[in-house]
Structure formats: structure tokens, C-alpha cells
Length: 575
Image (cartoon, rainbow, N blue to C red; front, side, top):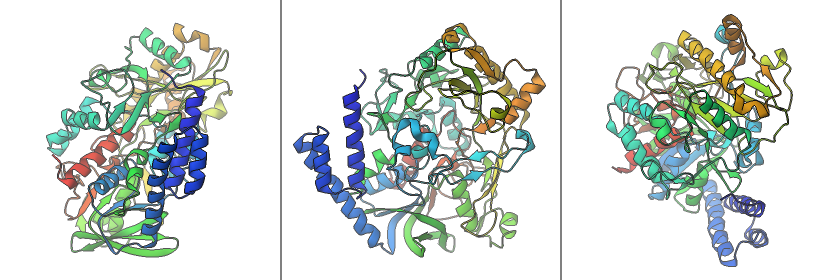
């Protein structure tokens, strides 16, 4: 059953009001008046007002009365950090959560169709990879969330859990079966409130995280599923069920949208804890480095409102993301000694893997068709996807194209082809890249962004896979089930191999899934062990996508939540 317009409007209004109250942006009286006007019952309104007012008061007091020491300091309020901080606070620990960015209570975060406007805004760190001949001399942008919620606030809110083989690989790499699919599936079932097709074996219904298939999708989305099926790709009711235990398939995307509003990860892990005195969320707090006693992490140094602070903790958790987490390690003397010496940084612990093994999914912009009669995009603008293999011998899918309900072209291809507004896209995506990049410091200045050699398309197999992927997308887009939506193919058309290869280099971008720069494992290039402890250091945990040994198959928000859950379980001694 779909929500009607009145239900959506009421839910959206209540979500905004409640968030504003929790953040101290509206007062109790204004909240009660507006909530009653939106149709909320008197009893429910007063209960919500009590909780929200306590949270706002508690956070204002805590921010103005920072302590010198906490049980835990968590750096970064994204998909990993919000999970860890929220769960630690729920268990009674004193937690300081530091977020460099600002509020997530803005339309660009809350409204499903507005998420692309976060890119290159104040909610994006603004990273750019080095220019590379592998992408025809282009410098690809690398958006990363700089706001409460991190990537879960600024990206497309797709809940893609990853393939069974991903987690079994992580278990093999780490030497710990707790990372296996069998165990991770238990966590997913525990945390999910799945609103789609019943699957008692694989999906949870009583967890904290609202997840639904895209509601009332644009007609072109189910048409793409039929088109995929017409070329031999099976369709499924759920992109995260049996489909991701085998060869793949096509499905309507799982989204984190509730009552017509995007939900980032803090909405379900963090905000409910903010009324408690034992957690402080400090926004606009940019971490400058870590403090040590010998090789034990003792403190975090950060800047807030022009003032420098040093606060100690029994344990520090880095959840700053796959670019800023290795940066903080290197600034603190943990990394490749030769690289550190170039910037006058004394080596505390030699860790050759810091910043190496960089991975991101490649998204090609794109295969575009002009509509016969344009349809308005719905939900997150990208409601249908499929996972498939470019080579049947692979153990799991390496391709994940998304249908995007607007024209999606690069800064180069948009000048070479006559793109029109009334158009739609199937964007070929490579989710098992063999190319590897590296993150290094530009200087010893903590305010300088890191330098990123993305390595995109450097391995020849990545281009081979995308050549297969782009022809598969063209076949689907030009198939009989799509004819009602196609006036003409805009790009790339039927190109020869050399021309298509050049097109891919011109069109290549990323999925904004930066990862793997502090990988978990047992070899000398592993930065953390299976318990997410930084090797050679006491008191320091990493809980973000940087610890992935290999990037997950699909959008990375859900696996990053799993990393946060595992970190919390380990820190709290939960078995």
C-alpha cells in the first residue's frame, strides 16, 4: 500500500519538526502548535516535545561544558561513526562525537530528489583525484559527505548490502569468521525494518533501519527490469535477497526513504540518544591530529570556532572516511616512513598500507536516450538497477549499472553529444575494479586536503569489463520493452572498440564510494586487525569504509553500517 499525499505531507512535516526540536532550532511551544496543526495527537505531541526538548537542552549544555576526558571519542558522524557513537552511548559510555561538517537538517539532505545538489556544496569535502591519462587527462571529483550523516546525508540513499562473496572474502582476509556472510546476515536481520517482499531467511522486520523498495516508481523503472529480463538477466522482488547470493539480477532499488523523506544513518542511531547527558555531538569540529603516550592513543586535537582543543579518551574511534582517516594516521606518524619523512613527520609506527589499496566504483556517464514523452523522475532519481557479470567465470557480479531518470553525462561527453533535458540514462557501473590507487599527504598542514591517485581504469581488465557493460546497457536501452520511452539514442551509439574505449575514458566518473585505504587483514599491508584495532597502536579503532580489504559489490552505505555495528559489538564485548 502506498502513502497518499496527505500521509506524505504529515510525515514530512513531523520529521522536520522533530529534527528541528532535537537540534534546538525551534522551541517547545512552536513545536506543539505545529505538530497539532499537522494532525498529530495531543498525547503524542507532548511525548515528542518532552524528548526533543531534553535533547536540545542536553546538547547545548554538553557543548558549552566540554569535559577534558571521555570514555570514547568518535571522529566523524557518518555511516560508521554514527552507528558506533549511538550504540556506545546507548550502553552508558561517555562519548564525544566530533563532526567537521554542519547540520543535516536542510532540504538537500532531507528531500529525495535533491541529493545531487550536495555535490560540491558546503556538505562535500571537495576532494579531486589527480589527472590521469587513463581517463584522458581528466581529474575526477571525489565527493565525500561533510555534514552530520556523512555519505548517508549526501549520496543517493541506496541500501545495497553487498554480495555473499564480499563478506566471505573479508573473513578470509581478516582470518576471522565473524566477518563472514553467515554472521553479517544476522546483523542485517537484527538492524533492518524491511518493508518489501517477505523473506524470513534474509530480511529483518523489527530493526531500527527503515528500508523500502522505491515506492510508486516511474514507469520507466519496471520497464528496465523487463528489458533486462529480455536479454537474459533475471528479475527479483528484492535486490538484497537471494539475488546477491548468486549471479546477480535486476530489481527496484532498496532505499532509505520514509514518508517521502530521506533518512540518514544518524536519524536511526544517534538522534534518539542525544537527550542523554553522556553523549555530546560537536559539529564544526575539524580534527587536527591525535595525541599519544608512547604507542597508545590518548587524545584528539581539534579546532572548533577558531579555538584549538585537546581532549583525552580511553579509546579513540576514527570514522572519518577513506580519505581523512589515513590522513589523520599519517599526520600522527603512522604510515610509510619514507612518505612521512618527505613532510618532516617523525614515524611513530611503520604501517606501509596506510593510504594504499584505494578503491572506488567506476560509474560511466552514461548511455543516454531521449524520451518520446518525458516522465518526471521519482524518489532518488535512480530506482532500478541490476548486478551482472562481465565474464561468466567470475565468482560474483562485477557490474552494477543504474537507470538514472535524468540525463547523466560528464563534463566532456556533454559537449560532444546533443544532450537534451527530456532524457534518461543507464549508467554502466564497475563494482569489482582491479585498479588500485593511493592517498598521500600534500603537506604536514592538517588543513590541506590529501592527494589522491585514483588509479581509475589503470588495470586493463577494468576497461574490458566496462566495454561489456556499456554494450549490455545499450542492448537493454534499445530493447523492445524500452521502445515506448525511446525517441532516439543520444550517446554513445554504435562505436568501434577504439572509439568506445575513448568514450569510456571521457565518461568515467565514480560512484562516490571511496574505500579500502586502511584495510583489514593479516599481511604487512594491513592497517587494522580483525577487531579493527590499528596495528602497533593501543587504544585506536577504525570504523569506516577504509577498513574494507576489497570494496563491496554495490553502494557502500550498508556495509559501512555493518562495520560500525561490528566495531560497537567488539568494543562492548557483544558476541
